[in-house]
Amino acid sequence: MKLFGKKVLFMLAGTMLIFTGGCGTEQGSTKVQPQVNGQSAQLNVFSVVQQTADAYLKKPAESISAEEIFEKMILNYDPSYFIVDVRDTAAFAAGHIEGSVNIPYSMTADPNQIANLPKDKKILVICYSGHTASQTSALWNMLGYDAIPMVNGMGGWTSDENLGTPLPQKTFDYEVEATETKAGNYDLPAPATKKYTDETAAILGSADDYLKTGLPPIMKPAAIQESIKNKQDGLLLVDLRAAKEYAAGHIPGAINIAYNSLAELEQLKKLSPEKKIVLIDHDGTMSSKAARILNMLGYEAYAMKDGMRVWTSNAEINGILPITNEKVKDYPLKKLNTKLETETGAASCG
Image (cartoon, rainbow, N blue to C red; front, side):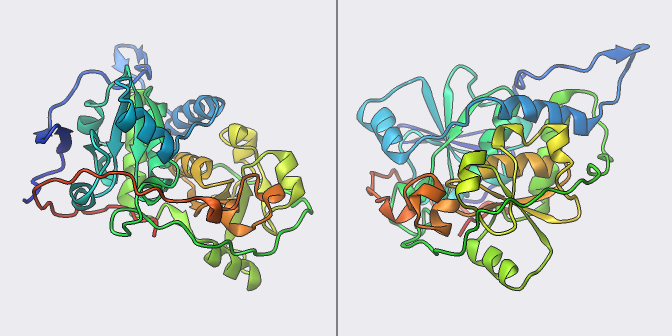
């Protein structure tokens, strides 16, 4: 079955697949910019994204496990939740969580798709590994929705490698250090060239510009280790964990900026717009949310895949149990009786 255009929402209701491309009137809780002398004032896009992101990051970082979703949506259906699967359409058709709707990742900043999201429910966002779901959650929360990602994505729901990114089977146990690395001081990124007259359009436009670059959402630990080993200077490693966790042990050369303060102007000045920024946390959830924000602000940022739990097996350093302790339950899947082509531009975290 061929997809036409990009205004498509795949919605599963029982056994029926519904296609819709309508526009809604509500677009999150952001404000419309006041007019000046009868003319719409041009926004400072960086300031809009920075201030909205800072307010979002100040809230507690949320995520949900596959076990919790199975209990809430399969065993004891809770209508206050709404599941959105951002994998490509072919993977969604091959197997998804029952009751999910499909908005491919490349379309998650499309106003026509976002208009279909409920504002009176908690939106559970699902992807292959948890990384693009976390990025999407950050954007939708900045628009006023209540969205949280599923940790590990479909890789934590099923062992089928065609549907989700498999969990690593062992930690790398790469080198860590306890010595603090001092941050530099840099200019903020160059102002955005596009102009917008309301905050929602500025946020969506910044997100869509990033999605259109096709940059991968993650960087693998092995690539980071190779950069450290060869003493390459192209990466800026930023550990988003609490100062106490950072002090216990971190990746060599990483600076420390707490997740909830990352979007503050004085913290952003510690980041070089000329380097590839790699964000590090416990499992990749917070770093993926932060990566979306930094990319919208004009940086080039990636989340380290799977976080510190794969860098070291030392639970006192990585803050949580190593990833090898997590087991895939192989929860039930729903399939569509139709073949859908893969949405172009889908991001992979493999």
